[in-house]
Image (cartoon, rainbow, N blue to C red; front, side, top):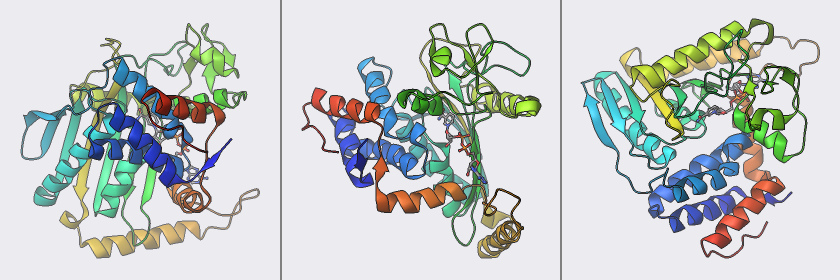
Length: 349
Ligand code: NAD
């Protein structure tokens, strides 16, 4: 498995997307969102997705260069239509627009229709929190998302429907970014690529029976992922329903009852400008003191320390920026094949 510097992964991915028709800027945005996910320790949302995004362009499901338009607008809300450009491009555009508007009126909420996979939600909320906002982002899976069983159900009915909220501090943001399923689908893909079994309690097979074999999830026919919570999975299921209603039904992006086979993310994002509530510096200081107080708790048996939400990702970014990113062989071969297919030199690992 090659260890590759983040900058090399960025330029390989950017060149591939550019060769497939994205502008240099847009290709850079997509590459950045993917490689930042690797840096944050979430290989499930990193360059493992390059082949998926390329296949989507070739199938006509991703339309490089499509301009985002406005479907509906009030002083504090915007519904965008991404017209199936790359998800990270659409989300970055909508976020920048939302932050400008939230700066004026103290808050802004937006939704995105016809949006491809936006990748790791924490990427966007980290940027918004550092700029002085409290972002809350949810996505559903439009077009096909039936990979997660409802609590008490045997088969998939919902997407992995993640929730992400972040707060600025005097240092790195405190950032929650979690699926409402027990695990992100991409993490099953990572285990499958590595030839590993899954922990118990992650998936059901096609018949609705518990399984630890990743192939039982992918099928065909597909099995299902369980909602998060183990013995209290009704809580993960409740969060999933809220994400589905916010990002698919409220925004009008479409929910799991409307499956046309064009898989994407319905996006909901609420941005609160901290400065509209209290002085931004005062807030950052208070949030940092809260974090320090919570972290100061004596560790339980088996734990070295208390970590705040977002801390594992901030630490991974520091260490992987220095050491490089270990890319699994399947993903690396996929990157090399995509590069060759578009006429680029074979990347060196
Ligand atoms: P995870 O379980 O690794 O982490 C969830 C949260 O817990 C994070 O906020 C993390 O900082 C925190 N955390 C982890 N370990 C901790 C510890 N020891 N102490 C304190 N806090 C800790 O993440 P996940 O649920 O597997 O989600 C993975 C990624 O998948 C997310 O970035 C999400 O945005 C992404 N995702 C995207 C989509 C999409 O369609 N775009 C769908 C699903 C998931």
